Length: 345
Ligand SMILES: Cc1cc2nc3c(=O)[nH]c(=O)nc-3n(C[C@H](O)[C@H](O)[C@H](O)COP(=O)(O)O)c2cc1C
Image (spheres, rainbow, N blue to C red):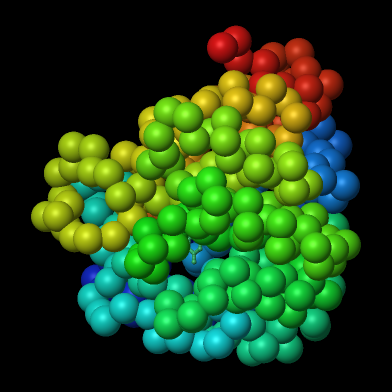
């Protein structure tokens, strides 16, 4: 029986944010150990970076870069820390994080609570990216910033030295107006400003699942024009598919199982719009080997997860990686990269 099966009832007896804080504290106490060896068939290269497995930890779990190496030792092929804003900020008032147990989902309206970029920089500089695991840094804008584009430029500059890749997060629903940066004029202005700095590290753009029909094509065009290296599809949704939990009416971004069909559809739309010209990273509601495989065949070169780990424990990454290796073999592919985008659309 996994340790998490014992810990889970204790964690679930606490409110979600306290449980998260205690989980981070427990993980910090773990020595960063050698991760399980990844089979050669799972190794993959995206945006010039070598990933030991395509299964990553999505942004938001390790906001302050406290346990990135521990998460790599637990079997994640890559870990995205953040979102980090230039200055520390408190985020929204509590309660602001809800487990929807009956739906295997989470609603959060944290609002980029984090200790600021300088604080994480000091820790990330110590990271050795053990055994090839990749640590990416996700950056955002402060809520009270008068110039959000300047915040992204500052974040990319500040964090590039300690990041293998950087993610521009313009898709959180919890900072009022942030998603407006996905609109045409604002997006081009932002991406042009980032292109100008030329930090020499791959830059990924993370998008929302709640987009209009013409948006994927427009966003892909802007990303290609400004040499973005990959698109992360997607962040949480502000929509509310049918839910059973008493927390269903809470404001915020919904993640976990109910997001799966929306995020999968969004990924397919981005694949259609991009026709293989830019790598896609699939995230949203992935909780099993089948989900991961479906996302890869739909066009994801890498996948990420967060909410399923709340319900299944951190071993989920190693379990999905093992299952993927088996699936690659069974379906007659030489490696996982060969399976990317093999679903017919
Ligand atoms: C509690 C919580 C906090 C999150 N915080 C961030 C964040 O700071 N930045 C970000 O880009 N995404 C954040 N996300 C979104 C996740 O990275 C991911 O895109 C989303 O949860 C969908 O994946 P999942 O269904 O596997 O959780 C957060 C998600 C959750 C549940």
